[in-house]
Image 1 (tube, rainbow, N blue to C red):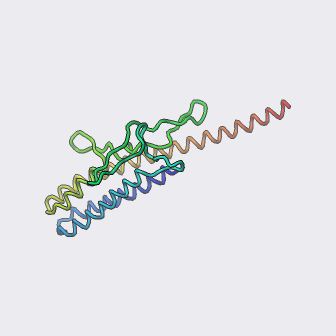
Image 2: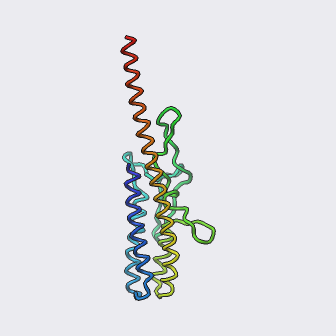
Image 3: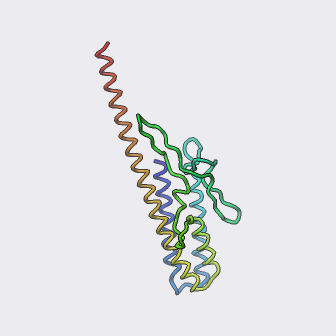
Length: 195
């Protein structure tokens, strides 16, 4: 449930970034307008870093990987790196049923196509775009806006896929819980009959 709520907040931030990207591509804006947009995008990037570092009820990083202590680390220059590697291990919840409570930060925020055959992450996309907007110039902003818009849409699609997966896992947990309750009731009836 906490993963779902956090991913909804991530989606909201990415949707706002997409709106700003469309706005920045407008050729009628001047450099001061684009710098104002860059400032808001910096805030969005920082919010995404904070969301990536969300902790669960036990104080553990919600989007931690299989290895490492946290989810992401932001350096003083704004560069964001993923802590650890691998997917979160599954938790046994019933006979032969394992469920991963959440996904790694790399799965949620990384793996976005860079348009050159490789992958990047949403933090790098936003940082590059912010730099381009701060550099000034309509042509630079327009070109950077196109690249950023494509990457942000890919990130939105990816977060939506992860959120759908989290929802499916929550539904599976409900089914397993219901089965366990029914089995406990049946055992109680059998026990009473035996007594």
